[in-house]
Picture 1 (cartoon, rainbow over the protein chains, first blue to last red):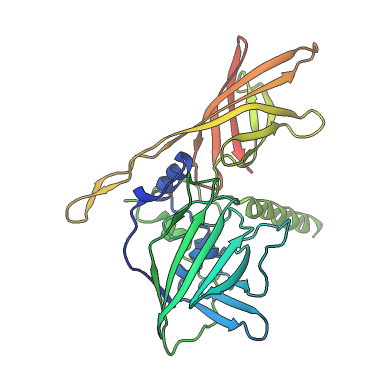
Picture 2 (tube, rainbow over the protein chains, first blue to last red):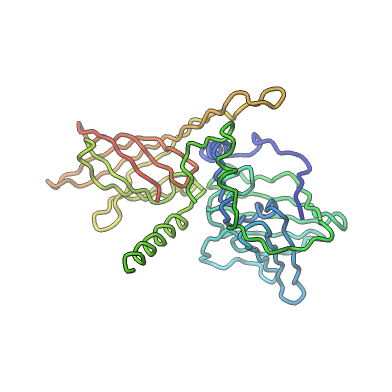
Length: 206
Length: 152
């Protein structure tokens, strides 16, 4: 699947805390995104993973839905469909603990237990470990999932906010294939860039 | 052969520390290590652990038996401006980076048994990079100097 926003959301509408806005702005200059260093994408960033993502629905037997990344460290997310509460004392991870339920034809997924080792999207939207991330997936036609997320993170924002809707497009006749992020990774070069827009005077830390 | 093994093990441990420490949330959250002193030759180790709870920064200095809590801490940002492209998409005005100013205060017991009040003021360099640093100055009464902390 590939991701297409239905309409761009202006940064000014996001209720950043001041530090979060400054971090966001700085990331437009210093593009040190962890994903380009082969780190797991992390919740919504998963749908911008290069070469797509795949949903594997095992709700009927395992009571779980899996979302697999392609162009990353071959990580995946598990959505537990048979739980209504998160475990206590979660160890924070890039994908946290996801529980899902159906509201009509919409799959609603709530994720907590997220660490602070990834960006929410390729633009560099920051978050903290206080994040509660709620996603809504609606299949609007055979080939398209409508996607929207609500960010509730009092550590980084002054209020919960909801993204614009995105369309996740089914790519027919394509299967996941073996992808080794660590081989021939040009991420560091891309981040250091052309010297015209990205400040390459900073040290690169893997 | 033993020395090669030692180097490999040390390298692995250092790499593991760097990887484990990657942190993309609040820029101050985490453990910082460096030194402070009155002159370049007279330095003292300084370790600062800070945590952001969504509204306040708390933490300790030099964790361990002699640990002291941070009395107050804050980070103020002066927002910069994003780069502006020209009308035809060519490079225009370059970005002005935001400034991340850091202030924290500590009360520590001195050798005479009294309390010293330290005030640290600095800024974060490379604020969204893994190897960010806080660089600045400190005062304690009429004594003053500089400090430098690197995010571990």
